[in-house]
Image (cartoon, helix red, strand yellow):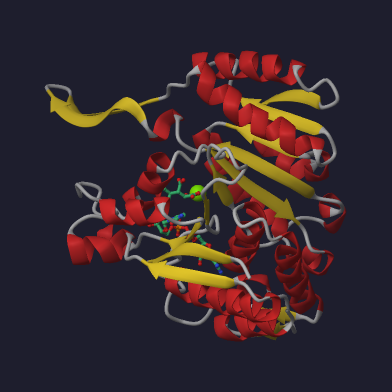
Amino acid sequence: MATFRILVTPGDGIGPEVMEEALKVLGRVQQRFGHEFLYEEETIGGAAIDRYGVALRPETIAKAKASHAVLFGAVGGPKWDDPRASVRPEDAILGMRKQLGLFANLRPVRVSPELIGESTLKPEVLQGVDMVVIRELTGGLYFGKPKRRWENAEGRQAVDTLRYSEREVARVCHVAFQLARQRRKKVTSVDKANVLRTGQLWREIATEVGKQYPDVELEHILVDACAMYLVRRPASFDVIVTENMFGDILTDEAAMLAGSMGMMPSASLGRQRKDGTGIGLYEPIHGSAPDIAGQGKANPLAMILSAAMMLRLSLGLEQEAKAVEDAVDAVIREGLRTPDIAGPGAKVVDTRTMGSAVAERI
Ligand SMILES: NC(=O)c1ccc[n+]([C@@H]2O[C@H](COP(=O)([O-])OP(=O)(O)OC[C@H]3O[C@@H](n4cnc5c(N)ncnc54)[C@H](O)[C@@H]3O)[C@@H](O)[C@H]2O)c1
Ligand SMILES: CC(C)[C@H](C(=O)O)[C@@H](O)C(=O)O
Ligand SMILES: [Mg+2]
């Protein structure tokens, strides 16, 4: 029997609601496959600002480093949204990513045949969509310095800095090519090389890294065109690799191919240890959804699918990961729908019923 340490950070809004369901599903995995998951829970985000005055405590990072993986819900909400606030709930997720060195964010986009009808896009456009967007996660505009606000005779000013180093671009491109080798062997590198110096560096390095993977096709697309192709011919993409901010925006767009933000899991990975393992952080790409929090309307499948990615990528439990994904496919096939993926006449269930249904099918 294997024992794994998992840090659980539910966060704010629907974060705790979807986390409860992921833990229910993992409980069933423990029972069925006989593993031991040792959980530690930490308060983060807005809840931590209320309790400790900061969104992320050093103790939480220390606990994360002592774990095999972190399961992260979502942070944020109107209560902490003052644009002048010196601490923000989002500092929790940004701090985790940076301090744990999680530079590669994998965001798979799969379209269940049963959900094609619920999308706002035409069914024929969605046929065969199966891609992974790899978002660079610890560089770019999010972290570049200087980053500040000030005021002068011309009024209020602000600056964020877009900076990338050769090393930062190369390492995330390697992740993309290695993943493409296990898939359809195509990488699309997305940049803004027609305008930005960082985009030119990105393209140059993606091309150099690509030469080390002659069996993988590499195409370059400008980010504005990519936003268009994502809704025009999404099935043509296999692995997309892009910088932090572009990846953030393009993946919310891509969520609409899968039907809802509530269907989009993610894994954030960093350097591997010598034994081939490495800490990973697993979270849905959606936020705390204040508009539906506390109403039982949140779709827990993105969080549950993130837990499946954790089983596969940080705990090395492929069969268990597959069992969770198959259970999710089964409930979708059987017609269970939270409101975000429910068409007319659908069998609408609440967050807990959806989570229990997945757990029961493992
Ligand atoms: N990783 C994170 O913690 C994370 C990610 C994104 C946004 N946020 C934060 O969340 C807060 C709200 O942001 P937002 O409203 O722009 O984005 P959001 O992702 O929270 O919500 C966008 C829309 O998608 C819906 N939605 C999201 N997740 C859903 C789910 N699981 N089931 C059903 N519907 C779902 C919401 O109801 C809303 O209509 C902000 O404070 C933002 O900073 C946090
Ligand atoms: C909450 C926010 C900081 C975060 C981001 O911009 O990275 C979110 O939008 C995401 O996609 O994970
Ligand atoms: Mg986002």
